[in-house]
Length: 193
Image 1 (tube, rainbow, N blue to C red):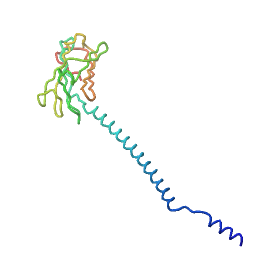
Image 2 (image 1 turned 90 degrees about the horizontal axis):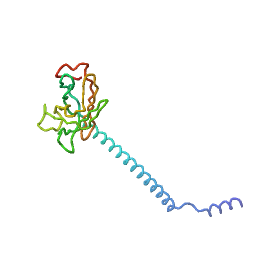
Image 3 (image 1 turned 60 degrees about the horizontal axis):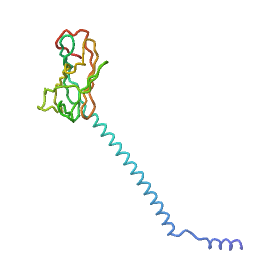
Image 4 (image 1 turned 180 degrees about the vertical axis):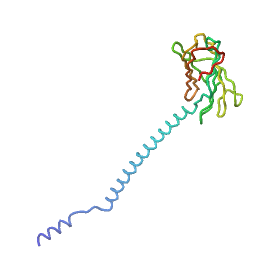
């Protein structure tokens, strides 16, 4: 009997958790969970925003792409090339490209490279084949670019010569045109496919 009365006394002396303490613990858990959720969501939103910026930057880089339409036509004096002509159009979904050769700041630059010489700013002219009368290459337009090779005395393109032209717009990717001349330049007009 004494054992039972000792046990009953111990049970009466122990204090239980009150409702207020339970509420405080529950609120603490909710606050910690809310802060954790906020941190996770903000990190996710920040990283998805960075991903979106990267995608848009990549699209801006490629959207200005031009395409070569047709062949590269060369005029010659039967010993070396004197000028090159090629037609340009925009790639699908590309943004307009300024081909005005006299524009001082926002213009397309054409570079020449071969095994012995390079020029990063060749003179060129543009004529409209289809489209409006400006030198802004827009969707659905076709412009012919003519590069006068005699304007730079260091450019000598004779037989069996490999050379590269780079058409670099103000924004977007550039177009590389690499050709090799034939073993004999006996015509005044050559199609360099």
